[in-house]
Image (cartoon, rainbow, N blue to C red):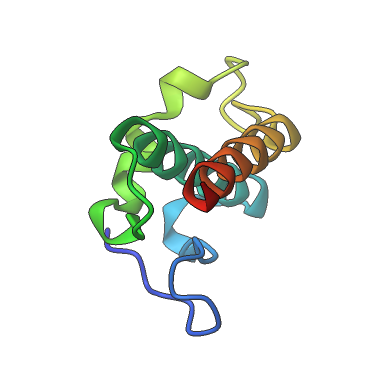
Length: 99
């Protein structure tokens, strides 16, 4: 499932589509997972270009086992922890690209 771009910030991960998951909690978790995947790849490849086009929502969904903290299908992860990790990794990318 391709990612529709947010016109305000072309490289910011947009809100996930409603058909990705049944609840906003799950969709927000997948958004955070996608942010983490993109930031990790940017750090690993030492690139400062936008990598959003290289990822799909399906990849975020497929990465769930790596981030899963519970067997509860309605709450498989802690979204606040995922957002904190995504924020920290994105800050590292910004810092690395500022050098």
